[in-house]
Image (cartoon, rainbow, N blue to C red; front, side):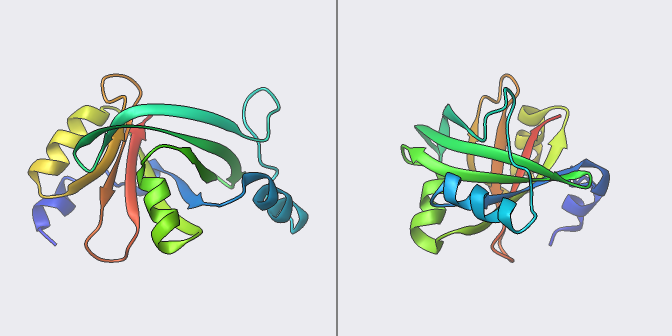
Length: 154
């Protein structure tokens, strides 16, 4: 790995936010995890999950997709459950190719668009992103380890 990336990394321990896990069936997964003591899962408004639509890019092309999302806190970190619910996306691609499992680790940043530009100049490959002009996010592929890294607005 290029030492330059390590010196300028936005991936600081204090900014670690969550682990994203892809699931096939949100309700069934939440029921199972809560039954074994992991949770409770939920979103604002006392909903177990929300379905969110995104408009952005996937593998360099314009894309629109939706995903069911639910979270729980584990100490200072979150577990984020994600069930693809429509459109071509990095999440659906992962589910189709690898099945359920850990998809990404996420870090908070103050300037997502700025970090995307900087990280791409340093050689990281963007997998997908959305809403970079507002409170957006971007996923980057890793060469080793098979885990995607997300940066999202603080």
